[in-house]
Amino acid sequence: MSRDGAWRNDAYPGVAVDISPAMRDALLNRDLDLAFLVGPITMPSLVNLPLCRVSMAWIAAPCLDLGPGEASLARLLRHPLITYPKNTTPSMQLREMLAQPDLPPPRLHSSASLSTIVRMAREGIGIGVIPPEVVRRDLDEGALRVIAPAPVLPEIGFTATYASAPDCGLAATAARLACEVAAAPDWRR
Image 1: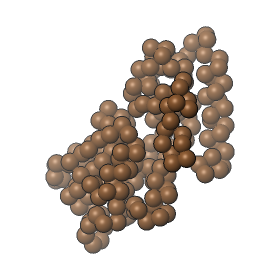
Image 2: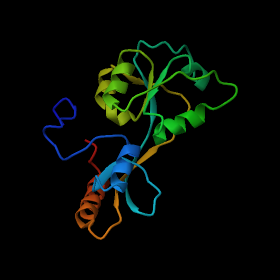
Image 3: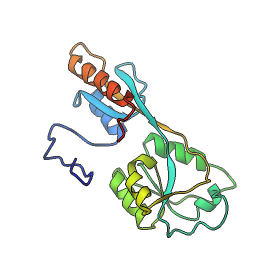
């Protein structure tokens, strides 16, 4: 990554960045040896080692008017919601939460680019549904805020996932190392 947090493919040409379903498929096709993804992926041919769990939050620009009091789902749905692509776990969990007959139909914008989601939320286009850890600097600087109190969103878990195969030694070792790093108390700094 560059200093501003943007991904630089030229710096890491053997590393792929994609959404979890695409990485799962690449693991199954043996196009990838190891993936860090939202998991676990429940398939007998894949090994999942838990890395961490992260909270999700409703994130918005300070200029976005949500009115006084608690931010109910109905109040949040007055604005577009911006989150991960349809076929990802966080997006499916969000859609499940919003599938209530007493709620207005949601306006959902999805993107596989976390930086796009953050930029759209920062510009007041809608409410981002993302982990607050990824926008900590924006939160600290006041460019974004966590909407609270608001309905609690389910956490998402990340795994180090690799194919269960005789030649997976390096991937298994790297996955275990990633778990050790993720277990360290200060890994998120």
